[in-house]
Length: 253
Image (cartoon, rainbow, N blue to C red; front, side, top):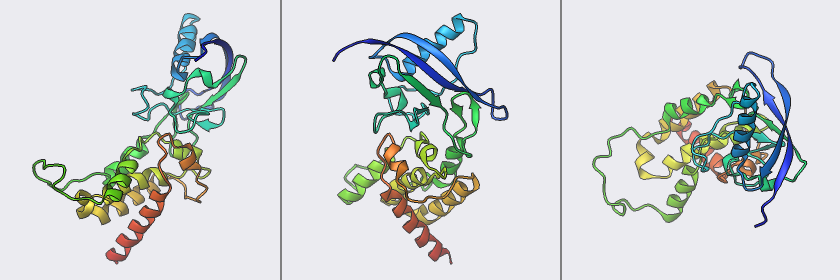
């Protein structure tokens, strides 16, 4: 693979806190390697800003391996940037060309208020999980993996739903700021397994109620969430959650 360097113009959203007015600021970075990750490029920029006595750009990151979901950035109008099924930390600078202008923004959603610059508060997701995204029944000691027969398709669907990393790209890219893909993935991964059966009804009712309480918008089935999800979570989970919700509601009545 050809290695090259590039000079870039960055237009980055700067905002002191959730109550202040933000604006784009323009930066120049030079001699950026095509093999750098996008976050490594930001490290270089921040080192440059610190040397110049300026405030570095705040951005979220942790594992930098596409697992934790922290690296939430809107890059040139796309969640996590131009590569499909990819997190920002796994985006490499070879996705861009010398002389490019790159616009970087935080997630834009009412339920994700900006903390500073590119960092947003995603604890609404945590509260949804706390409302029911777990198994609290006593399942006893660990048993052999083959002791509880599970249909292969159900096991595969549960595994794929569990791949959701809670990054919030689905919310940020939805025109209504809906969290339906995230919540449905968390509902599905447990509803499909026998361990999740005892709390199946209360789980979906409580998680949907918390989602609404947090101020997320409604789903209008544009499928933008699935298109931008770095893990390719399917909108089929939303249909499954709707069925689970209807079933639980009828039983409650």
